[in-house]
Length: 199
Image 1 (cartoon, rainbow, N blue to C red):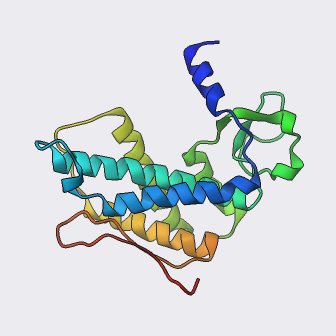
Image 2: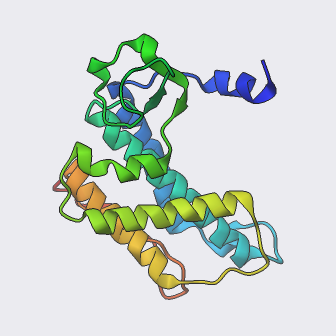
């Protein structure tokens, strides 16, 4: 067994519907951390702003991925990939109850991109364009921050607003929860991660 396969085996598990709450709780940790992380939380004194923003982009991407996976699981869909012999489609639109466990690849899950692309097959979202765009921004942030680093990053405040709007729209439609969410990026903004107590 090669090194990557050895480590993947440590994480190998066929995820079940009951895992959705754990995924959602961990997603919320990352989403809250993204909103609230301050430059003073960063230990490196020379590049605090750069590193804070980089971590926010990483964390929001992780949070959005876990949130989307939570939604699929909550609705009984398989987020693990399938073994090569599986006759069905290579898409995440199969109910767990319909797939023999032996056909599921316990070592791998569908990518966030694939899950975003198939959201409408699970539920008809009213704000699907907004949700997809915000999640795609978060995914691209996470992917780039995990692979490269530069001394400067072109800051587009609108990107963070679009992610926040996507997250709140997704909570409303996917989980019937009202969330106020704001990623504090500028000195004037305050971080917000707050559920309406009536939901």
